[in-house]
Amino acid sequence: MEKIIVNVSWCDKNYGAALSENVPGAVVVTAKTYNELIDEVRNTLNFHIEGMIADGDDVPQWLRDGDYEFEYHLDAAALLQMCSPYASIAAISRVSGINQHQLSHYANGIKKPRPEQRRRIVEGLHKIGRLLIALE
Figure 1: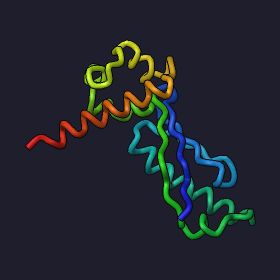
Figure 2: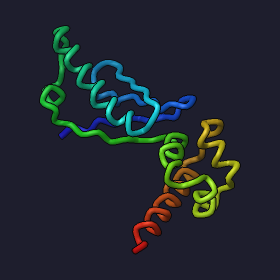
Figure 3: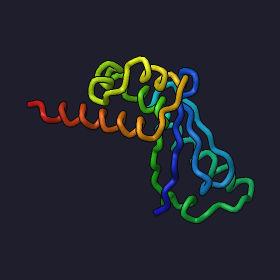
Figure 4: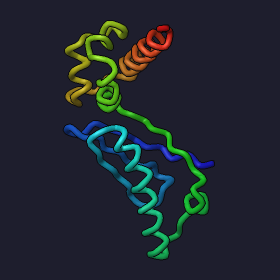
């Protein structure tokens, strides 16, 4: 099974995604919500494949057969925006140790965190998730 990387960014109040280079042609998608983006990625890729076949383009067999899976890579802004209905910037700040003001800059795409900062954000979100799962 082939893996298609979906690089997701937060783009001025919308999610934007681009598919990895193993998919021929340029495939980009935008949506207002993360869940809409997930749906649009699949629909747009199917439309793209149909168009390539209709145009007589060379389409890899794995793509024709649907023998692929998506792997979503979210930048820090998209990650924080996607989690915002479930965890506030204040909560993420408390568990990650990153200043709220700095997190807000990351969430709005004003600044990009270094890899270590992004790791701390992800670990903080995992900690929140574990705490919520432990509730009975």
